[in-house]
Every structure is written in C-alpha cells, then in structure tokens.
Image: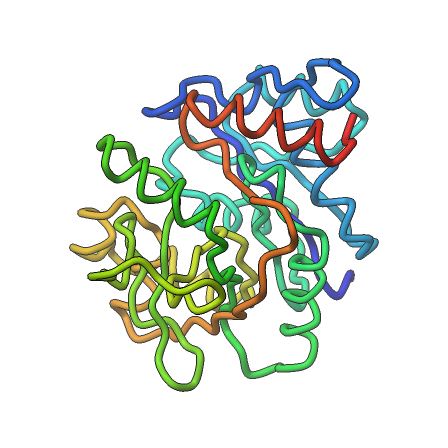
Length: 266
C-alpha cells in the first residue's frame, strides 16, 4: 500500500466554466493541451513518486485521461464536491493510504514545492487529520483577487487562521478586510490554493456529515470540516516568484497562458 496517493477531481459540469477539464490551454511552445493534462503534469512536477488518479464521473474526461496514459477512476455523479470525489475514489480503488492529496484540476500553476511541503507535513504529523496550503499574497495576486471581487466574479479563496495556524474560516471574499493598501511584504491576506491532504478516516467522516450552512452559502467544501469540529492545519508559504492563478473563470485563461509562457512550460 502506498504511503500516499494523489487524486485530481475533475467534473465536466462546472457552472462557471462548463467542460473546464477539457479546455485547451496553450503553453510556451504554443501547443494547446487540455487543462487536465496540464494539471496532471503540474502534480507530477512535485516529484513525490506517488500513484496518481483522476477522479471523474464523465466519460469524456475518462477517455481524455486514458489517452494520456494515465489512470482515471469512475466516481458517482452524486459527489457534491472534490473532497467527496476523493473519498469516493479511494473507495472505488479499494485502497487505504496513509493520506490522500487532493490536487485541484484547475490549479495547473501550483508550485511543486507546495505539494511536497503538504506531503511532508502529513508524514511528519500522524495526528493531523486534514491539512491544506495557503500562500502569502504577493501584490499581483492581491490585485487579481480585488479585481475579481470588484467585477462580481468568484475568483480565488482566502483563509484566516488562528495563532496555531489552524483555519478559522475560508471565504471567496478577500479576508481580512484591509482599510488601507498593505505595505510591501506585509500583506496579511492568505490565498488558499485548494490543495488538501486528508487521512482516509477524515474523508469517511466528511462524507457521512451533512453540508454546513456556510459551506452552502460560500460554495466552499472545506467549511464542512470546520463546522463539524474537524481542524484543518494551514501551511502558510511564501509566494514562489510567480502568480499561481487558478483557472476559475474563462477570463483567467489569458493570464495563465502568459504565465506558462514566461516560465517556459511548453
């Protein structure tokens, strides 16, 4: 049994971006590749050597993943979010790893070091049930978040933590509210990248629990853990030197392609 496993949840019916996992994304060479292919490559760049599966309920995504020589796993249409889909994937695969990493299918710019840090956190802290990664906001990411918020778009997610580094709340609003522009290098806003690691038992508990009011209002699955008293460790990391924008909306495509070109990712 592997010590860990990476699961990439991918569903076709996104309300903000239908068919997003199959959306064409061009890299530095100009070659257009499906988002799911780029997300798999991004997860593998962490160099963890862990088994990787794409969890989906859509035959088109299954076929695209198989064409890449990767391993899809069919999960129920009833999965309400990526966390439930990761739990269903472990059940369908019949495995009980020490931990499972949820690598977001739209987070193709996730820094490899962040994935490695998350895996190391789970391996070093056997009592940690759930962990995630947040990034201290650079000026560029903060401006991107504010622009999305001002335009009424649901862009990135922010997280507020307690003194021990555990999550207090996640929101699609930019939190905490800053009355004045932050000083360079002193921005308290943490961008949550949607990169999680869970123990299998935490996933089983999650699936058995009802959604919370805040989870339903914000559309943020991780709030179910907090509502039911399951702590989430937040690993706060410095910006990697580029803006790891997620492909949340079609308007994110151009800046993401520019970032791939700037970083020389074909």
